[in-house]
Structure formats: C-alpha cells, structure tokens
Image 1 (cartoon, rainbow, N blue to C red):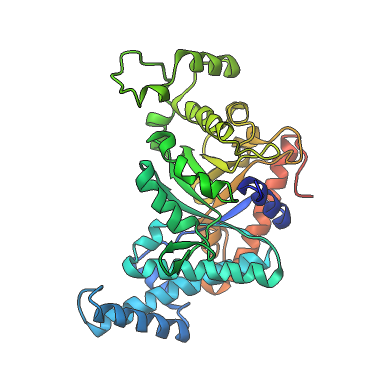
Image 2 (cartoon, rainbow, N blue to C red):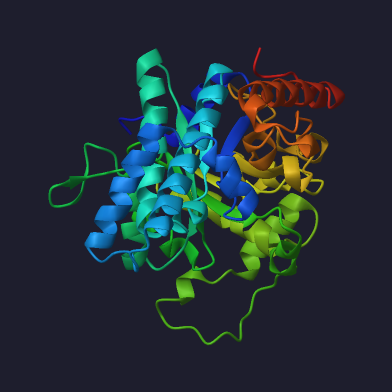
Length: 389
C-alpha cells in the first residue's frame, strides 16, 4: 500500500492527543429543553445562514408548509446545534482531542439539512487540523450493512474526500476516516470497502455492542449447521466444524457468535493483504459495559477495538484492560474509547458539571482531564505501561 492504513493513522493521531478518548458528536433533542439549550448557541450569522437555507428549501418544495414561525424555529435550532457542536469541537481541540465520532442518526433527523450541518462540522475539524498542521481522525457512526451493490454507495458517500468524484461534478463532501458497519450480511458488506481501505480509510464492524439486549444473539454459542440448504454461491462462506474447532482450541471454550465474527474479520483482512506492520484498517466494536477476557486479542491480534459505553452508559476502564496489545510498537493500546454524552454535555450536574451551559468550554476541559486521569489510573491498576507518555 502506498498509504498508511487507517489503523496506523489512528495510532499516530492518538499518540498526538495523548489518550484513547474519542469524543462523540450526537446532538440529542429535539425536546423543549434542548431547543432552549441550542438557542443559546445560535449566533446571528449562523441563524441567518440557516434561515436562508430553510426558506430556499421551502421554495423548492423540499419542506412542507410556509409558516414563518416554523421557519424561524427550524433555522434557530439548526444554527444552535451547529454552534453548540462547533463549540464542543473547538474546546476539545484546545485540550488536545483529535478523534471524533458523529452518529449519522442525529443528523438524518434534520431531513434535508442534516448533511449540511454534518459537513460544516467536518469542515471545522479539517480547518483546525490544517491550521495546526496536525492529524485528526473522524469516524462516522452509521452502522450501514448491505449487499455489495448497495453497500458501495454508502462508502462512496461518506469515505470519499474532496479529490474523489461521488457523482459527476460533485466531490466527496465528508471525507470521514472510517465508518461503522454491521456485517450480519457477511463479508459482502466489507468487500466494496477494499478500494477505500487500500488508500488509507477504515471500517468498523459492529461485533459486541454495549447495549444490554445485544447479548441476545451476540453471545450465543454457535455450531456448524450441516443441514442448512445452501446454494453453490453460499456454501464457501459456511462456518465449518474445522473453523470452530480451531477457535475452541485457541480460546479454551466453544466460541460465541460475536467471537466467530472477530475470527472471520481477521480472515478477511489477511486474505486481502490489508494488515500493515501488524495493524488492520478494519476495526471491531466491543462495548465497555461488561468485563472482557483475552478473546479479542486472540482472535484479532492485528485488530483495533472501537469501545463504546464510557460516560452515560457506565462503561469502565477495568472492564477492557484485556484489550491491551501485549507487545510491539502499539504496546498497551486499548482501542478507540468512545464517550458521547458525558463529554458532549459535561456541564450537566449528572456528569460533574456546573449545571450551566455557559461553562461548556471549561467543563469540556475538566471532563477530558478527568478521562485522561482515570485512563492512566486503570493502566496502573492493571500493571500495564501507559502508552501515551
């Protein structure tokens, strides 16, 4: 490969920021409380910009209705969300954070205006990185997963950069460094990502999520099914007794569904020569809300974990220390440690803040300082060298 793969780029970015923290950008709402909150961050220029956008959209028939009061509320809300998230990004950047993860759902809710808000946030992060001649790493949490012909447009939409052409005359608008995918439909989801992976982009396969009901299927013990009625095209992808026996020998117990997914992800990366210097550009989601064993490191020795669940979901560092890479240049690396609400709304008293959004910037700083301290203390408790010093 002529490019550093996504795993290597991520590691360099995390070394620069001195923590595994990934700050989620999820604009909660739109209840009355959030409408009031975001209105405080709707600067006049932003409000006017979005008002013009909303009015033009109504004129073109993209938005039903022409009630002026609705137009004002919509434009104020959009400007407020944009202003609030930009403030969080800038405050986090001032405190060294370079890894961010917006969730597409919170922007799709804005209908035709969501892409506009999201693109503005991407541009701001890019401006900050270019201005300081440093790296950033932005992951889109999209959880897309479909057959190859449908999956490829998702990658084109979100992983394409300004030098790429998405449709005639239109370059990539977002340029995300990686995006989350669900691989329930098999490696057909990953195959169309190969051109992007081979030039430095990444994908993140949702494997063991942090939500409680994820256990229903993800933690099931699995067995080969010789009675499955498979077509000739399907048969090569069936999990055999031999694969399960190999996994059980490595793990010391029969594997679960999510562990089979880890194994198959590693096999896909190696089959396509994606691993560079022991690092894969295909990451795997494993949540921080339950204690982990060494299964991830055994089954994905060259893999990086995206670890959601910190902050509001109650994930703990002590749950995930088994993820630490045991040796090599990334020794001690745990993964991408994602926190959204606790760092996005740190001024709230439930997250140790002042209770006043006017202290947003200082509370972002406090939350980041506390995260770094807790992270370092967890390494010490596990007798693992802290990799960011």
